[in-house]
Figure (tube, rainbow, N blue to C red):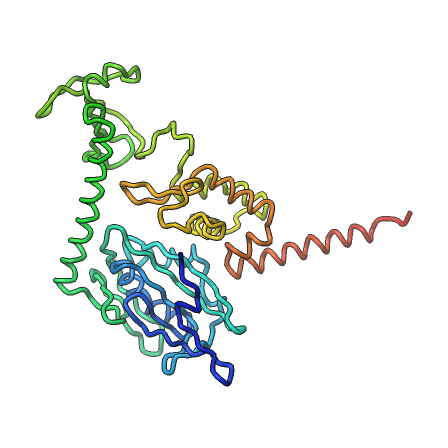
Length: 366
């Protein structure tokens, strides 16, 4: 479960009504007083460092010294999709993150939660400078950032080595889980897909099947029998969909981007064409509905693929998000969308109400 804003900051109300922040900046927490463009640029290396070292939060709206809640104007923080585009210009791969707004004592805090990268490192790919009277370089290309003693620093050789070791351990654990599943199924019934020569659609993928299993398949159209350091197997050349789930899986899992696209038409029908709608918005809707209370998903609406650790949205989850938007549009907008989108929704509702009122007034009396 994600800790509350009060627990995250350790808030303590003072005699004058101000809220003191007792939490200190640490490995997974950093504070910023504002969230303007230059501040967001300063945060890039912290975002990379958090992703490389277990994840963390940046809280916008806290003074530096002493630390008190001062709040920010959330309109100065861009929509998540826009912010994702901004981050993707400077970091690769782009870390997963969510943006939250919390109102405390009438003051708004913006919280950027950065998830731990499953396969680090995140690397700075482009130089970034602030737009101040005297420009400052805040990000150097080719640098791998690490979180150390509450600060984001270039990773040392030892830290980089440990980062790669942890990544390798994760990969090894995934491989062992495959063997565990193969043992449960029976090694004589397991097939292996070789994607080493796959680079783009149309490239060849080799699927190795036990001979007995291959004899029972009617789908093999063109294949040749090969032997590679073991029993004979069939080698099939052709296009194979990159998925570890069966097409016959009744839950119909989809990756986040595909899932968001699948229900886009319903979202646009409920609201308006080209309303901001990405996998980031889908995630916020699913979190609001409690589908991600567990990091592995709830198994009914959401799940995480065991091998790749990629999140998947099951059909019931997609339908639930669609129904949430259709049946409770105001609550949906409030839970999922940015301040700018909320304002546009209010404007459109007001326009519809005015048009309805004008139409009623124009009708002749009895």
